[in-house]
Figure 1: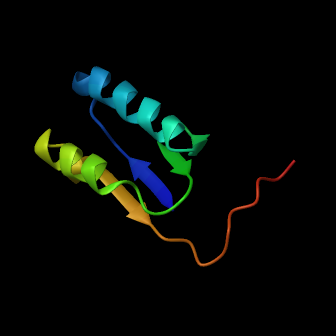
Figure 2 (figure 1 turned 90 degrees about the vertical axis):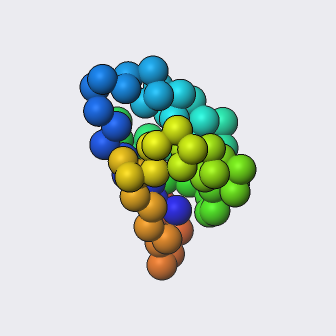
Length: 71
């Protein structure tokens, strides 16, 4: 799953919280706001980001083939 997000600077704590959880779920950072990892994100996590109004800042894309990090 490819996760891209644009959480405003005014929500810096939420942005750091989101990055922390992506790491916890086994995601790797490609760029600060572009992460790749296993699919899907946990349903309770998705529900919570909807509850705290971050859902509109986040886009996810399922990859056709696995991502391989280049050396």
